[in-house]
Image (cartoon, rainbow, N blue to C red; front, side, top):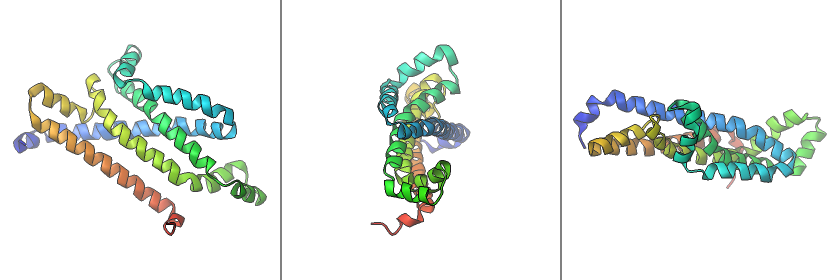
Length: 211
């Protein structure tokens, strides 16, 4: 481990970490914005669930490098290429968990809310989503950790965040960038996962007594 290299390249390391966080955060945001309405429609009209699951499943199985190569004629070597690819990889996990979370709400709870005069929108946001939140957040945690690992692959098109450190290490046959990239990737995954657990803990106080 060459700490002198780390000190002299701290700006490069910080920039790579920030780009990594940005790619992960935007991919999850865009993925959720697509998966949430799709899941609502699948819950409302169950016949949509199978085709939606199949399409998002096929997207998830496309090799990342092949997907980026397919996108490059349209978006080039840009952040858009990385974001589109990474967003597609979040859809299966987010869609499936949102649907399962909403389906886990007891019909009697829905009936009680309806009897109290809740509109469909109020019933969704005030009753169904809070109950489904643990399952939905579990999906976000899995998607976040998955994407944190996959972002490194986008370094091959110049948009890889911490993956750039891996390329630097391989190019120079120098272990320090590889170790720094690996440690920061693992630390970021752990930090994001713990942060999501903390957010869920704060948003679901009624779960604290459940064993």
